[in-house]
Length: 298
Ligand SMILES: O=C1C[C@@H](O)[C@H](O)[C@@H](O)C1=O
Ligand SMILES: [Co+2]
Image (cartoon, rainbow, N blue to C red; front, side, top):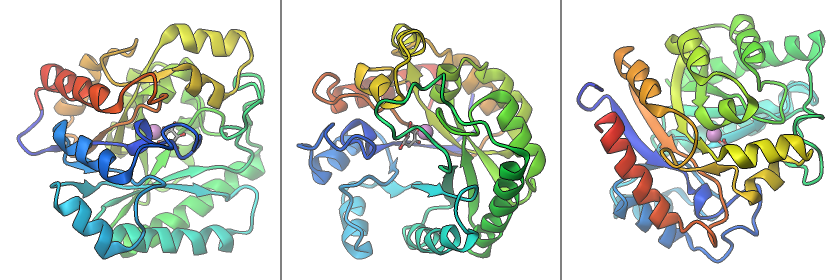
């Protein structure tokens, strides 16, 4: 399957403490979270709201557990705010990640996004970008991609439910409109499945630009309920739409095969936001680790 040492496996803190819904996992500490990640067999993580921002403190806590920072989420507002506002915030984020040794920067456009709105129906009210929005987004991302390149880092774009870049068509458009040497793609299995896309089609279309992977699974009955009952993204999360790979409807076997055959190198991050009082994060982290070993051989 994968070449030896080609991929590194991480897990996002969002299963322990959820930045979008701070009431989920408020009781879980930073130390518990990173200790359980390491104990479950992961060597990397993204950054959550409980992580110390003091670089030496964070580095020491991670080193003790043989963990690295793979990346962290950045919200861009290229369609709705002056470019310089996003640029200033991006530079601070980039420099923090650079100091932490990360090689990729996760960026998602949040202009007009409904992902953080508790009551807005996800499928009915998803934003659709105008030509002007697309132009601002593409040129802004190219500029941010250049800033990432200054530090020998890569900008990886996170397509996301409830945003203007969600569907296969929108991902294709973004990839066409941006510079292939400046803007790369984060491939998130769960968002594609939830949206009703074919995850394999997106993988095959854009393999050469995929430089970061989120392994997220979906409980199909909850996804169906969110669509039929006009629920919001966050209600879907609270109801358990997402879970760890192997516990839902996404077929990971062909996904791992294509990634491996294409020579993918980089992080695969398990990312399963769900209510930790219903889905014990350590138990689910172990389930994910075992499933990846069995299915992907890493
Ligand atoms: O990468 C991600 C970060 C989260 O904040 C987001 O809402 C989640 O769904 C995701 O895929
Ligand atoms: Co993700």
